[in-house]
Image (cartoon, rainbow, N blue to C red; front, side, top):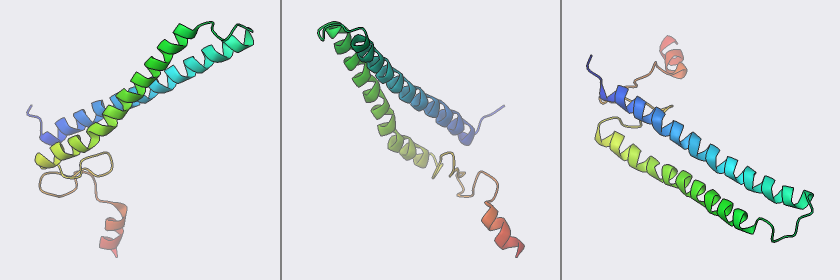
Length: 117
């Protein structure tokens, strides 16, 4: 069965969105882990130098996770540009349009109401 560009674009959008969610989850999880480690050291009354190398590695991990999230967000305009080049103007979860400019989803409720009036 041949696949349309719109079907492929939806697939790409969903994969992209899942990657974005995963990057955000990763960044938040690493930050929570680092905070837990710091709090645990304090609760255990350990000297401030205890675990310094671990904290340094966690800080690098956290920074990398936020950089990954930033890169995904920075890719949004490039995906929009590609969709536009392929005739999928305004493609996204709330603004899908087919190459002919007509909405790929059902008509909006406001349009239906105005047509019924």
